[in-house]
Every structure is written in C-alpha cells, then in structure tokens.
Image 1 (cartoon, rainbow, N blue to C red):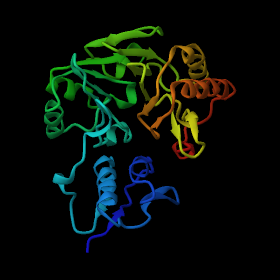
Image 2: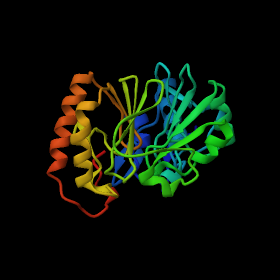
Image 3: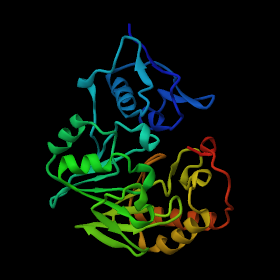
Length: 288
C-alpha cells in the first residue's frame, strides 16, 4: 500500500497546509503528513497539495505523481481558478486564472510549463498577465509570449521585468481591463499592486493575506522588502477605496467575508501597520 509523506525539501511555505487541512500540518517548522487519507475526497485534497507544492515535496511512496490526477486549474468560484504548480522561482507563490468575456487573465503565474499553458488555452484566449510585484515575475514573459497576452507590471518593480508590455505608474487606481482595477500599493516592494475584480475579488500579491494563526488579515511584516512605513501609508490611502469579498493572496491563506466585514478588518490592519517599525527579514516569523 502506498503512503503519502513530505520530503525534506519542504520550505514551510504553507501551501500544502492550506489545501489539505487536517491531513498536512506544521511540525517543527515544516509540513508533515499528519495521517493518511481515509477516502477519495481526502485523497483528492492531497493531490491538490502535491500538485501545488513548489518543491514537489508532497509525495507517495510508490513513485511519481500521477499527472492524470492533476486537479489544476482548481475552481474557487465562478470564473476564478487557482493555478497550482507553484514555482521555486517565486518562493512558492499562488497564482490565479480568471475567465472573462472580454478575454481571460492570469494574475501572477505558476512555474513555466508548456502543458500548463495549453491547459489555460482550453478555457479561452488569455489577453493579459498581471504581475503583482517583482517576487512573482519570473515566468511572466514566457506565459505572455506563449499565450499571446500583454504582460503588466508597475514601474516601481520594472527592473525585474523590463520587457513588460504595459507599465503601471504612480499610486492612483486605474482600470486595466473591463471590471479589473489595479491599485498600486507600495510597501512589500516599491511596485506592489492589488488587482480588484468586479468589486468582489482582491488579488493582493504579498501585500496582505489571511492568517489562520491570528484569524485575521495580516501583512508579512518580517518579509517587507521595501518599507513597512510605506505600506502603512498605502493601506491608509487605499482602504476606503477597496471593496471586495474574496481575499486571494500570493502567499498566505485565502478568505471570503462580507465586503463590509473585510473593509472593517482592513481598516484595523492599516491602524496596526502604522504602529510597526522596520525589522530584519525573517521568513520563519511569518504567522501563517
């Protein structure tokens, strides 16, 4: 009988624990399989975790992953999919596919793979690849070229993707596609951007995320590359302009709340962030 396990390449990025809660948990600073699946539904959760893990550390003792069991893109809501297949070159960040009448959109990207690009084409033409910031830019050009899409990034992070087709500038929100608003949010990096779709979905990159530890919206204050003070200013400026129910980050967990409750929590986050001081980068200090 084949068993599931997590190998020693795990970087404790939390992705597997998000997708297979109760089956995979944190033990001594890394993910471990807590118990084997009891039925098909639990086995499917482990396939989600395995095909998302950026180091391919979620494995079976009987050999490689079954590509026929690949569940991605995985539907989160009508027209919104989690891409899986996270990349070591983006520190294991999540990415998303949106299916839209005017043209489909990738927000950040998974690892580069021709098979994945072809799979996205099955959902219809992809017109745009929106990058949230420099940390997630590694495969943007490859996907944009393969899919015939425009590649977007903010000028603050342009040096990470100088071959971008469209450059966001300044700090004012701008509509970049029908129903898609880009909100520049310098802080995590100088060129960080939120993408808010239909006043319902917020793709926050690494600017903020849902923490299961605190049960609230948080910033990764120990992994803020540019300026926590700038992030506080950005949040204060933007919080009353943002309306959404779904928080869909690059790192950290996802969460859906009523829009009014999400805004209340963002206001509280802005107030907390204003009290923070810069600190050394420490990945292990992130409260997943």
